[in-house]
Image (cartoon, rainbow, N blue to C red; front, side, top):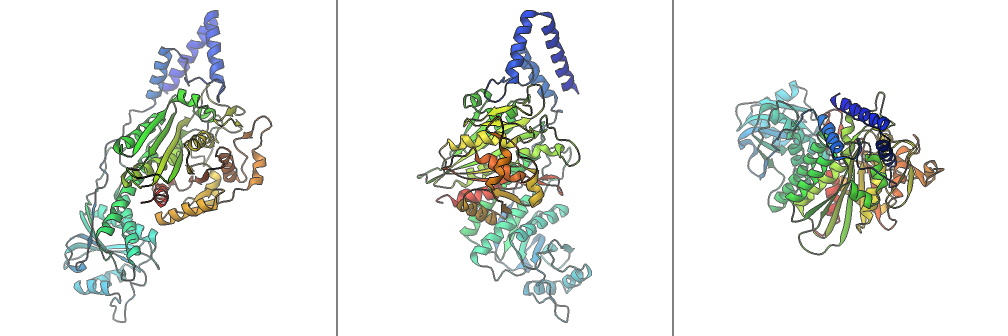
Length: 583
């Protein structure tokens, strides 16, 4: 309310000046004209008030007044030591012994004894109580089931059985780790052992993958984003022993790699969870610079301001940013390996709308989710999370550019209007027929910029369309690309990462709906096939010599159940980059 009052007072003062002074009125009219021209035609860098030093100070005060005095608290990220164990499970000493079981593992003979040898051994040590309790609680090993039993007679204080379903997969092993984290939190456990009732059939490679999935689930399940809570319960878990999943340098290397990916996922979650009054484009740029500073041996940072973007003729991006008091920041991180030659150059481009009001086509009505539009920078969070992970992993033979055109899509007298024409940095003109189709406008200039870095392949990520959520639901991201080979690469990476992608068609005939009578194109083609026409729009800004793939992650960026960010796509991006490296 205070900010709105300040705006009204400033506007009233300007209009009074306009009425009272002919010389002043001429100057102010020129300012209004400058502000009203968006794109690259004539853009005013001052998005709210006039361009005097005093006005700039007032604009700064207005922006700060909206912050609500909210500052994120410093929280400790999970620090868990993982170790491989080959000792007798029954003799292990600690707080919780967790055993992952399939439905088949829970089979019993006519004497109600477990047929599975590990469960039978545990049950014998406990005088049959494990079998008795599992029957009483109707625990059958179905996915999602778990039970915790406190016994005397073992080295561990508690035994937990966690269901893996009929046939365990990567996601079910990750769920096992998440369940262990949940049990450890509720009991304030410090040490946990994890074993599979049936691990003897696993190959060496599958044991590594299983250990990685369990570790990922445990790490991410332990983490809670409590930065904005006045009180929070800290996790006490600090050590996890893995039984029956191998040992030695290869396992240690795999677990370290998993921890590095998880650190990137946690950063991505924190960026998306942060409210728009805390995570402005400027703060997002600061977070990018922190990554470069932390891994300065391999990552450099370049942050472009409004004037530098104008020099690069980024009219499409700047048109979106024009209404906000928070200035845009164009983020460019570059990873170069610590040694050796570079065989491949890649770019990861993320949509970076730190808040999306919809602009003059404001988001209204049930289901518009305006209150969640802090997550409209989920693509940039994925890109920066991947940068953090790769800064630790340091793959060889590959150069990676991380690019984000960060801004807000707001409403003010300086903002773009429906019907305005923007000119992108490749010279193409865009008639804005919907200001709420803004993400593609920012990506247009980001993609042109990425191509100008001389890259071979680009993957862009964006919470771009509701149409993709309608088509694929909340758990699956849609991918679009003219390249079958690149599609195979990214899908293979997603399968290793345990994330779900689905390729959708780029139907060229749909481009007819994107044609404008007065410009090269419009920015949205209507409701039908909305995610396809959005991808076709982005294609206009990619060099034909560059392989390109677009990920529409509007569904899986956010968990309605947990009311929090998921960190989606970061593991996939890391796996894709590593698959293109010579490491």
